[in-house]
Each structure stands twice: as structure tokens, then as C-alpha cells.
Amino acid sequence: MPFKPWKPLLLTALTVGAGATAATAQTVASAQKAIELGRYNEARADLRGNSSPEANFELGRIYQMRDLPDSASYYFNRAAGPTPFGMVAEGRALLAKGKAGEADAKFDAAAKATKNKDARVLTMIAQAYGESDVKDITKPLTYVKTAEALGKGKDDPALMVARGDIYLKTDQGAAKL
Image (cartoon, rainbow, N blue to C red):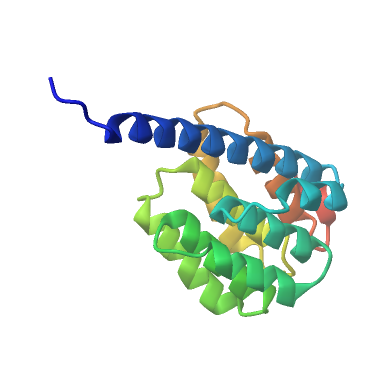
């Protein structure tokens, strides 16, 4: 059997790549938790040096919550792409710039790409509306109701928070919950 010097290199590269992916997911998850708790500096520190689309998306959320729409749009655009996740990021960039009509089209495209069967994408769209300045809540609530139906009775905390944020945009506040 001939010696194949590329096999150990391939195995090493795969091992390192898998470890990096796991580390990236862990830092993004800890940053998401810090964002939900309002610890934006801690979340930004967790994401520093990470250039994955998910990290850029979370950085966009941080800057949007700090009312820095240009920075938010920049990071959302870095996370944008042809996937449903990328379309949601692109829609959020448009929302940060105040272009709600164009953002609606991107969100509709993301929902259609998943055939309205991916609760995570629908929850991300609901979060986008809840964290923006959009006052009309009819469209975001359709995404919330569709995501709830996909959950089959299980409560999703992120979706519940998004629903509350959306209802806070109304004159009655969250009294409709």
C-alpha cells in the first residue's frame, strides 16, 4: 500500500475546521444571550474577531438596538447572501435604513424560500420587525402566527420576546397579549 502524505493533512484540516465551527457557534450563542440581557459591550466582545455571517448578523442587531442604523446596516449587509438567513439579514439592513417596503420584499422572499416551514427564519423576521421602528404590526404578526403553528404547542422564547416587542409598537402596548 503506497504512502499518501495528503491524508494526515486532510484529517488535521477537518479536525481544526470542526473545532473552529463549534467555537464560532458557542461565541454567537453567548453573544445572543448577552444581547437579550442588554449587555451589548459583552456581546460585542464575544463577537470580536469573528467574521462569520451569524456574528455579523448579531453585530448588526447590537448596533440597531443602540440606534446606530448605518453601522447596523453595514453588518447586516456583511451577513447577507442568497440563503434565507442572508435574505433576512438583507431585509434587516433595509429596515435599519428605513426602507420598510423593500425589507418586506426580502422577508417575503426568505419565507417563500423555506415555504413558510422554517420556524427559525420566521422568528428572525418577527425579531426584525420587533427591533425596528415599523409601526404597522399586521405583517409581523402573520409571521409570528405561522411560526407558532409550526411549533406545535411548544413555546419558543425568542418568538415570544419578538411578539412582545411587536405589540409594544401599538398604542395599547403589550395589553393585547
